[in-house]
Image 1: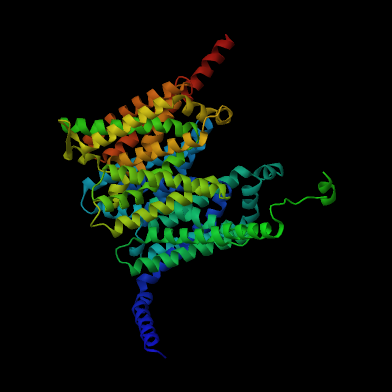
Image 2: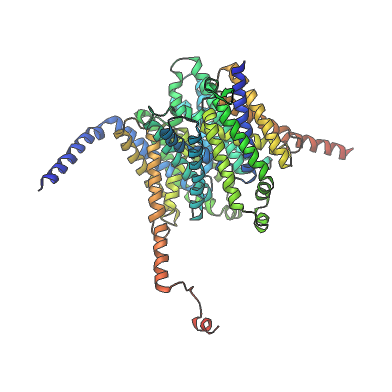
Length: 325
Length: 294
């Protein structure tokens, strides 16, 4: 082979050799697994959220978790992950309740209620964080990590929590698939046949909160909502069937976690969370442009072919009658 | 004492300016769009800073505001091509914000921003950066935010009728020949400008509190647009002043305290508003039942 080809081959082998120890590193494997699990769970739940138009609700719940985590630390004094996650869950559920109360009792609309709860809870959370910061040294470090995530410093116990959470979500989505499907597409019909739709809606809310909690430690409060929204929105372009959409969204989420983690390891100063989000955004762009049938490029090509075949004529039922006018 | 005054004044200007423009966002059901813009400007700020090497100059203001405006164009484009409106907003602003975070991390040494600054701003440092123009010496943030406040006030004043009509009855506005799209993008540009100017003081996420909460509180207290605008300025200023006072006493994040106080004021209106408060309505119902029994 040519000298250039030989040089290229050698460079590839060298790159592989430098990546290999990376991939074999136990820590990296835990982080990788965590991000893949996160992608799967948020991709799946994101589908239901998207169909119920709850995408921005996920954003609000994620931001509202901050004061929950801070209060959990302040009340218990421990930095246990379980305590934090319980605090985040309570705050998440509380925020969802507040949103419901505001929209139910006043003329304020859903979007305004979301923005109010998001910003006030998060503002309160930053007050608590700064309060914690002055009370002792190094106390805040663990909590700060929840802002943008600490994917790089996840340990095996963290990953176990995420794994259990993801399995629970997959099981719930599987067991209640028919019910959740009806909740997403035709809740009135469900009410009509006597199903307890409000309980199912509560279940969906719980699943949303659980999914936010799973991702909090990896990508943080601020970027969590991206993983709920983007893979599902991307998957929407590829299929009209819900179960297929769930699988595709989970795959997209997992892929984003996978690529994002690798990219963040190769570029040492980059936080992992944003890179995962950007990968997901890339997948969305590819889906939006090139998906068969719903992609824009596909639709443009179809329009182009139609124009070439028929000019600018519109399809007519009865050509003879039309040409006689 | 002057130190506190400058900070409170900056906060009051941010809250008033954002509060006024936020009223229109609330009325048009675009509150989350305001949230989206405040996140989407981050890469614009970083890039503008890289090119101009100073935060808060005219370059950063215009450059980042343009990015914010472009993000709304992008959201509109996505929505028109079949993406659900909330998903369009969600995809755009989260991707742009993630891009911004990546840029901040990558150019950390060249850009005087760290991620915490992005989230909750540095209003405490406002009085340290004094600028003298035309013989008057004030913190740079006051000059910037003051100018933006004036611009906002002037634009709202000039286009008062158009903004009012397009917010309440866009279809009538179209039939009357008012350029609804233009007014929409004008509003988005103002939101963008306000969030960029406020970014330095209160950060990305807390500016949303300033945009939405005073206006929502005012929405519960009055039925007139003019009243809503005036009240949101008053409530925003009160939140800024009280927030700073609490932050000074407890030694906590100033912007966070301002946001929390605005939330408390909203809660008060939610419960006790003369027209729409939960508790006032329940009390009125009880009085009515009592009087109809007698």
